[in-house]
Amino acid sequence: MNILEKITNDWQRPWAITWFVCGALALFLGFWLTTERTGLDIFKLSVALVGLLCVLALAFRKNIGGNGLGMLANVGEIVAQGRSGATGLMMAPIFYFFTHLFGLLHWRKHQDDKGDMKPQSGSKLLWLITLGFIALGLLLFPWVNSKLQAFAFIPAGSSSAISWLGFNITWYQINVLAFVLGVTAQTMMILRYAASWWIWIVVNFVWLAVNLANNNMIFAIQTLIYQVNAFIALYEWWSSTTRHKQNLD
Image (cartoon, rainbow, N blue to C red; front, top):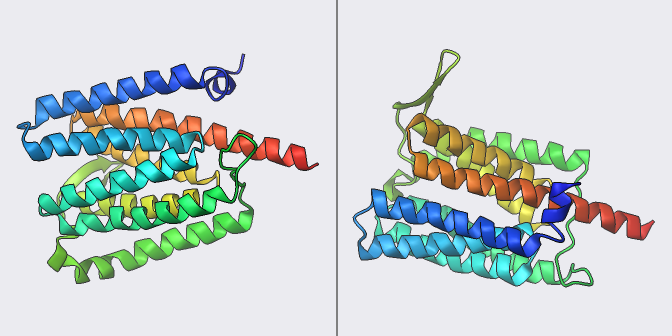
């Protein structure tokens, strides 16, 4: 029996409920054990719960649920980051907000008979362009970041986050990598490329390694929950492209 096939078809509803409950529980534990439970903390928890619903809907190619809730979550993230004084970190959700707005209109034009978005598979040229985009982003980011220090974008520092095979990886390097990969994955996803979920999987591995290295088990669990959703989304989107090709043949 193909478990992934069952999850994305016959078991889709019970799977979605189970996944969301587990994710919400991890977020609540993180909120209860690691915050002072202020009004801002409660607001951040609410935004995170909307984010769970958003990524779940995106995994199953739901336009309104994925892009609509994505815009709502992004507005919440912008407000939360602004209230926390992390003005630079507002830039990513601002970018995501406008990509979700584009996706809301773009996905509507590419729906199957069930009303779900029809993803598309990428070519070797797409991967070359994507890898080039990532390389360019990693090269340009230090210069751009230095110009944005007035906005507290990503503070450059040398504090080590992970030591691996004799190399020290700093928090700054991890933030740069995750930011560039996240922007790339988001763009590919909104353009309906199934390969975008491969990049989301890499991003999640980056943050999982950081959380484990710092014994931050709550966020490590949360990252694992997102990672499970990313693998399900990858299978769902790829299988959908296969079915669509077969229908065209």
